[in-house]
Length: 143
Image 1 (cartoon, rainbow, N blue to C red):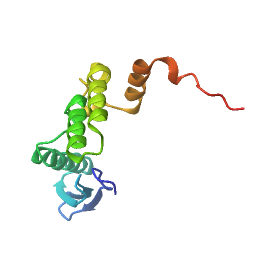
Image 2 (cartoon, rainbow, N blue to C red):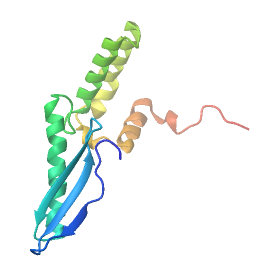
Image 3 (cartoon, rainbow, N blue to C red):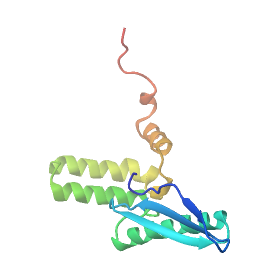
């Protein structure tokens, strides 16, 4: 199971006519958790379990004071550039140039998007706007 996902919900009929639902999920940090609930129907148990797992994820995001799905994309880029500066994986000149490109090219197009809104199609559309139509035309044709 991938981090940030949940498994299949299992149901067990109780003698009093209620239903017990159980779901196992994996937290972002890789640890596992289990949530159980009792409800009058399977549908209600499912809704309660999905909401409970969502609450667990929100609690995990709120605990580290870091990025959340509601954070802006520009915040992610700044966080990444701070990480690069801390680890020293890029030269200062490269890091400075990348920061400049982020502010000049990426921030106007994608900076105001929430992280949960960023999808592959959004990145491709922004890349095409940034680079132009050069992506659609091959630079070297093979024979």
